[in-house]
Amino acid sequence: MAKGKHKRTRWLLPILAILAGTSGLFASTLREIRQYGSTTSEKSADAAIVLGAGLRKNRPAPVFQERINHAVLLYRNGRVRKIIFTGGKGSATTVPEAVAAKQSAIELGVPEGDLVIEDQSKTTYENLVFANTLASKAGLHSYLIVSDPWHMRRAMDIAADLKLDAQPSPTQTSRYVTPQSTRRFAWREAFFLLKYRLADRILDQL
View 1 (cartoon, rainbow, N blue to C red):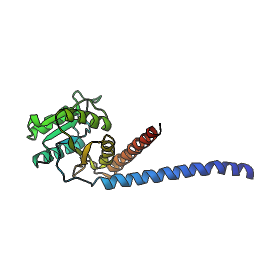
View 2: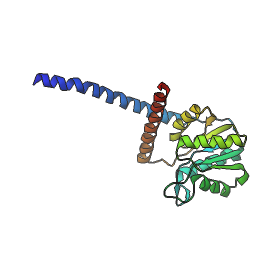
View 3: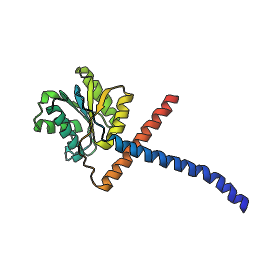
């Protein structure tokens, strides 16, 4: 009996060690995301790239609208001369996110000629890749990345990997205000950031 118990313990300890290490890594990633969310650049750039965040009844969802409002403020303050909206069409919408965002910016007084839309992307990575392709063709080479504070760390990791001339410009407010929504989004971001970083490291070894 003692021998069998020892055998189970031998297998249990490595499993517990892995779980402890994973939980520690997850916790440190959450802290990093929270701390980085307040990092914002005071520099100017050619354009603001606004990362998509979904629609409701073909209008920007509250989180997305906060990002649009922030980009419009950057434009009005002369920090950028163009705004690039990103995001394709979701399964429950009939218009791409970028198109709805452009309409909202026009309603806020931004001239249509200073708005660029990228309406094919489905992920943050695609947001930045496709937006950069359009921007380069338009002679735009430096960016302020606009997103929710909780999303900014992952967005800037991707921007750095793509070697973009980009600086963070998180929204000053967030629609993730309740403890439940904040916790859910933070955990989601920690998961996707770890997933992105681990995948990147694995590819580097191939």
